[in-house]
Each structure stands twice: as C-alpha cells, then as structure tokens.
Image 1: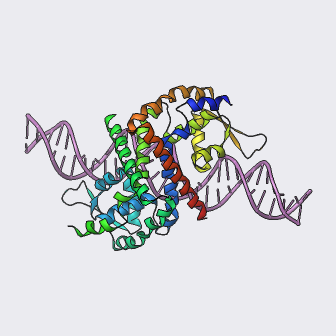
Image 2: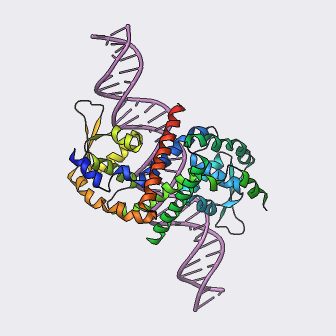
Image 3: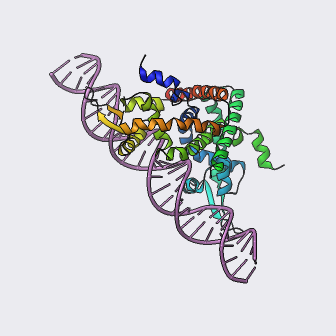
Length: 156
Length: 156
DNA sequence: CACAATTTAATTGTGTGCAATTTAATGTGC
DNA sequence: GCACATTAAATTGCACACAATTAAATTGTG
C-alpha cells in the first residue's frame, strides 16, 4: 500500500471526508445546472434568487434582500444595477429614510414570474431525490448554515 | 392575509422551499467561516482545497486536480499561479506529454500540512452537527452533486 | 440642540467560477 | 505520413462574493 494514501486514511485532511467540500462542490453544480434554464430568462443564478425574493414582496430595501439571501451591498449593488439595466427592477431612494434604497419590479419583472414558475419544476428532476428527501436535506442545511453564521459572529 | 403572501404559500417560487438556496447559502457560509482560520495560513478556501488534494498525492496534473474538485483550467490556472507565487507549489510541463502541467509541493507547501491539520478540527464545532450527521449529509450531497453533473452532461 | 455613534449603500480591490475561445501537443483514420 | 480530430492549459470576458473603506443620513445621548 502506498505510504501517502495509508497516511491519509488516518488523516482528517482527506477530501473524501470533507463535508465542507460536499457543500461547496454541490453548490457549484447547482449554479451550473440552473444556468441553461435561467439563460433563457436572461438571468444568472444569484439574479434569479433576487427576483424570487422580489416576487414574494415588492418594494424591499437592499438590506432586506441582503438579509434574506445572506449577501451584502458589495454583492447586491452591482447585481441590482444589472437587473435595473435589464429593465426588470427599479431602484429609488426612500424619501422617508434616504439611507435606504427601495427595489421594485417593473411590469417586465412582474411578467417574468410566470415563466420562472417552470424553472423549479424542471430542476426538480435534476436533483434526483424525492420531495421528502429534499425537505429533510433543506432543513439540515439551513440549520447548519445558521450554526456557521453564528460561529462567524461569535468570532468577532 | 396579504394577497402576495397567500399566493406564495401555494407557489413553487418560494425561497423558503428552495433546496438549491439552502445549498447555495450554506456554501457561502462555509467559505466565510473558514476564512479567518485559513487567512492564518495565507490561503483562500479554494486554495485550501487544492492544497488538500496535493497533500493526498504529489505531482498531479491540472486536469486531475480539476476532476477531483470539479473545477476547470479557467479557475485553476490563475489560482495555481498564486500558489506558485506564494512559494507553496511548483508548475512544470510534463516532458513526456507536454500538453500537461504537473503540480508539485515545495518544502514550504509540504510543511504547511501540519498546521492545516488543525483546521478541520477547529471547524468541526462550527458546523454544529455530530460526526454521523456529517457523514450522512456528505453522502446525500455528493449523490445529489453527481446527479446534477449528470443532468448537465445529458443536456449537451 | 450639538455631536458622537450607528445605519445604509456604494465603492474599491482581490479572488474565484465558468463559458467560450485560443494555442500547442498528441491521437487517429485513411 | 499526413490531414483531421481530440486533448490539456491558458486566455478572455463577465458576474459574483466578500473584506475593507467611504459617504451620507439618521439615531442616541448628554
């Protein structure tokens, strides 16, 4: 047996055992798998998530969107500008609190929702798991995500 | 009850129900959670994964590393150049097949392994799950990843 | 009410990811 | 043995992520 391989079976530094890599690699695969269907709408995967948040409720601030998606203004500001350029949303300063920027859907942005409904349906098959498995996995992941975010806060 | 919210309970377009978002968001949290500990080694999270692959076996081609991490040369080439600049690896053309580039560890790259052993141990707590939960989740995610990658290939 | 602390976005800079293309080397079919 | 396909990296261009900083508005406090 090869020495290096033997060492690694005992080692914690084994990619095969990395939960973090499983998450990382699956996330990359998700983005790639969605890409062809979202390209038909002219959206990237993160842009699609922002649109989903806006289809749930109009006139949200950048901060509110960021909290739901765990993204900061450094990511969202340029992304939202692209959605604005694409004619899907509008951005305007809140007249009551001018620190805030309110994001609203244009008619085109609203209209896209109907087409977007087909995306999760089509993608369901690609995941290759049952609805129950998906529900369970989602819950486990969200708990883990919250644990990770908490540990980041604690470290500050 | 608000109309939009009521519609969304029936809708598939509900962020709360998105397995893909749970994966995406957890992956972002993983990268952020690792960052402080990896910064002590001078590595980013993807750079750390490349180093893990190289600690498992020396003298791998860019392609071999890419297959293990599901990353292409567009991502790896600049990343590997940075690791080379940092003095952790060497890059040299295979003399037998000059299309290939072989990546090897420097003494410094080898030496970093000892420090890196502490990272998974420290991160284990941040995930907030048992070893068994982690093992099960990892297996489910890797299966799903393979399903997604397969569906991408089929679409071609 | 002055003024420091806080909050919200935007900006800057670095490092991924990935599609698409290019370049060079190797295989292959005839 | 030579055109043609295939393969491996590199390159180009675009869009995230995120740390760190900046700018402007609001809040809190004495």
